[in-house]
Image 1 (tube, helix red, strand yellow):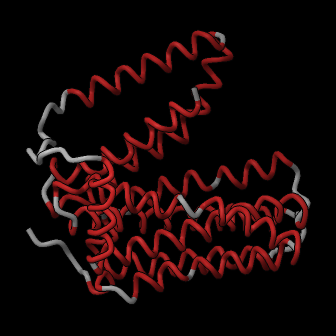
Image 2 (cartoon, rainbow, N blue to C red; image 1 turned 180 degrees about the horizontal axis):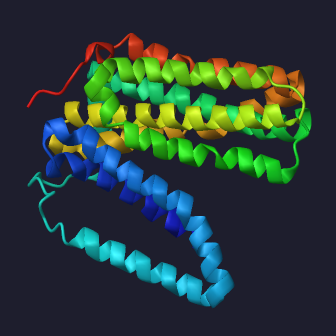
Length: 299
């Protein structure tokens, strides 16, 4: 059941990111992505609490049924879009589509930079999260309830970033946002490895760090998504999204493995520092590409 749910979730994520450029104007991509991510972030924050409340009030089977009803409502809402997202492009074999996606990403400088930045970010972030949990529990010796509170702070940060992600590119330009917001977010996370003890100041610092990192990284993600949608032809949006996602997510197991090995061999604090430094490769890839000079979308 979990495998099937994950499979269709991936398909949906690729489809909705590919559909948006056909539904809004070029200069509305950042705003459209911002609204979508704001809605999703709010749902991810409120969903667990709502689910827990339903289980307590109505029992688990009723809560599952309510969830199914909400999924059905979501499907009907999407179905109302109709065929506005079709392109009339002839269907080809799956292997040919995969090859075409790889070829487009390889030959386009902007897409190649996005793919490279995504790969190094996913690798470094997975290593970081693996070591991060060990750092909180073993090095800082935080109780499980406090660890949950610290991790939960990331959610409001993502929501704030989603709300700001349409305004920041308009104010500073897309290139500066994807480069400098990514750089600042990594600098913020870098301070985590300097924290010591499990006192109130350490806990407060961890919460602030997670909120800031969530806000800045989400702003970068929305801006990069809008840029990728802009430079990709409509008829191959899905193939490009799938290619970049595959390349990035394909490295996550190796990041987790390396992060765990580094924590075991070097200790959690040095491993956390190394994993955080690896994140800086992502804004470096973006800064060396044409994306760094992009200001605004033309009509």
